Amino acid sequence: MKESLLQRLIPPALILCAVLGVWEMLVRGLDLPPWLLPAPSAIAVRFVKATNLLYHTGLTVLEALAGFAASAVIGITLSGLIVHSRFLERGVFPYIIVSNAIPIIAIIPLLTIWFGFGIAPKIMIAAIITFFPIVTNTTRGLKSADRRILDFMRSINATRREIFFKVQLPSALPYIFAGFKIAASLSLVGAVVAEFYSSDRGLGYLVITSATQLRTDLLFVSIIVLATLGVLLFALFGHLERMSLRGEAAIEVNR
Amino acid sequence: MTPCVRLQDVSVSFRTSDQPVQALANVNLEIGEGEFVALLGPTGCGKSTLLRVVSDLEHPATGVVEVRGRPAAAARQANEFGFVFQEPALLPWRSAIDNVMLPLEVVNYPAGERRARCERLLEMVGLTKFMNRYPHELSGGMKQRVAIVRALAWNPSILLMDEPFSALDELTKAELQDELLRIWARERKTIVFVTHNLSEAVYLADRVAVMSAHPGRIVATLSVELPRAREPGLRETLEFLQQVKRAREALTR
Image (cartoon, helix red, strand yellow):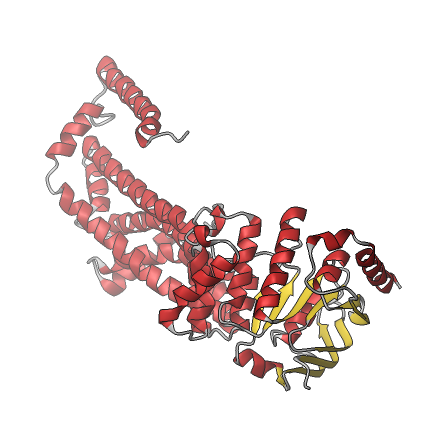
C-alpha cells in the first residue's frame, strides 16, 4: 500500500513541533537574551515584520539561478563536445578537476576587482561552483548510453546528431538532473558567499549585517529562508530525476 | 547467383594491453538469400565479432566482406541490417511502439506510415495490448519481441541476431523460437543467428556454422537435415537428436 503525502509528512511535522516547543520553553524558562538565542515565536514575528526580505531573497535567487543556468548551458554543451572528442576530453578534463580544487572563496576578490560590486561576480561565482557537478555528471550520463543501442543506431547509419539527441542525451537525463540537484544548493551557497565579501543587498548581506549587529532573530530568518530555497530546488530536481528514470533504478552521482 | 553474405579469408584482431588477440582467423562463409544460418560456438570464439564484421561495425584486418555483391559498408548505407542483441536494449523512456519507431525516424521512413507499420508489427508478435507500455512494465519475453520487431521495422533484408534468446527462461525461449520461425517464413529475411545452444541452432537453422575459439574460426558447416515447418514436437524426435549429436561432434572435434 502506498502512503499518502500527508501520512508521510506527519512524523517529521510532529518532530519539528516538538523541537520548536522545547526550544521556546528553554528560551523562556532560562530567560535567554534574544541576541544569544531568540525564541521561535520571536523569529516568526521577525519573519513577518522583516522589511525588504522579499527583495533580498529575490536578488540572491536571481544571482544563484542565473549562475546555475549559465553553468548548465556551458556545462552540458562542453560535455556534449567532450564525449565526441577524445582530444577535448583529455585536454579539458584535467582543468575541470583543477577548477574544482580551487577554493571558491579565493576567487571572489579577484572577480570583484574585475567586475565590481554588482551582481555579475555573484553570478559568476554561482556558475563556477556549480560547473563541476554539472559537467562530471552530464559527461558520465552521456557515456552511460547502452553500447548495444549505439551499435544498433550505427548499423542503421544514424548520424552523430541523431545518436546524440535520440539516445545519448535522453540516457543522460537522470544524471543531469542528479547533477542539477547538487548544483542547485551549491549555486545558493556561491551567491551567498559572494555577497558576504562585497554587497549591500541579498541574503548574504542580510546574514552578515544581522550578525554584526547581533540581530540574531533576523539571522535566523535569513538562514531559514536559505534552507527553504535549497530544499525546494533539491526537491524539484529530485522529482525531475525520478520522472526521467522511467522506473529504472536510481544512479549514483559525482559530488 | 551471388550469395547474400560472402566472407572470404576474413581476419580480425584486437589490440590488448599485452599482445594482439586474433578474434577471427581466415573465416570463409557464404550465406544464401533467405537462408537461416546459425553460428554455433563457445563464448569467446568470435561469433559476435563476425556479426559486427558483416554489418560493418567492425573492420576486418584482412579479407573481403560482401553483402549482395557490394562491400559491407554499402549494405549498411542501404540499411540492409537489422540487429537484435542478447539484451533487448530498449530505450527506457520510450514506450514499446515508440521504441519500434526509433529506427523509422532514422532511416527516413515516410512519417505518416510509421505508426501504422509499427502497430502491424507489434500485432504480429501479439503485443497490441502492450504497445503503450514502457519497457520496465514488460516481461523479458515481451521486451525481446519488441526488440525483434524493432529490427524489422524498416524492412531490412538481413537480420543479425546475437544470442537473442539466451537470457530468457526455457518456456519463453521455445515460444520465441517458434515465433521467429513464423516471422522468417512470412518475411523471408536472411537470418544470421549467433548462439551457444546446440538444440537452438539445430531447431532454427538451415545450416549451422560451427566455430571454435583462439583464434576464432569456422571448423565445420553442417546442413540441418530436417524438414522445414518445424514444430515444437520435433525437439523430441530421434532425427532431431541425431542432428544435435552431429553438431556436438563437430563442436568437440
